[in-house]
Length: 257
Image 1: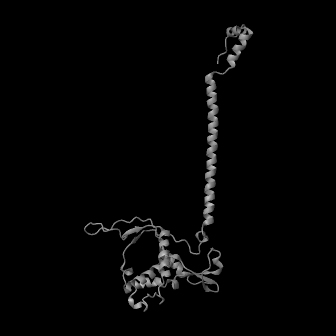
Image 2: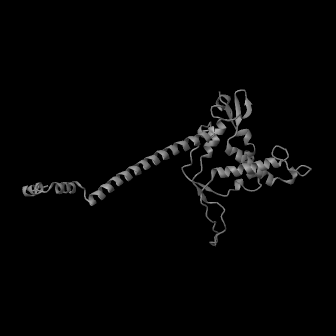
């Protein structure tokens, strides 16, 4: 800025004392616009500061919430969900096409071969876990087996056993019924309502647990007419390798020392 001229300074020096004080006060007094600008700057700084503090607070709160939720989730998980004697079964690399199969349909000797296998799977597909490992995996006691092991079921084989039991009841001929009219199961013991209700309820929860989200479309006949939804020919991309699970069950049916 250019300095004031000597004439201006001399003129100011010639002002009376009272006028000189008013002049100095005017020079030092900030303008209205300057006051407004300063006020806005102060307010903006305060607002920005509060906004930043709010953001930091909510970020910290969000991180703390995630941490608490994660810890609570781990606390409520069953020990088996964290660690299991059965290894994790990987999903198949290719989709599985659901198809109708004569090998599993109807009351035929051919179909009975496959289904009867699952009726007896408690004798072939239960696993023996060493007593020293039961507590390690957080399991409750199993069925008595040997002096150094206890016997457990794997859910998939239990589910197949229940399904085979329901099928046997549906196709059971009158010749296998007791004189009192009650049907006999595969062990020659009368079917009990408890057993059937158990299987229905157990399978319901198994299906809901898996929650297969595959989209199924309509069946179209030769004339192009849509004949409802059967589920055949639909690719399922969430299937796991059941052969690997069966191989594991067979391998661990007995304890190897």
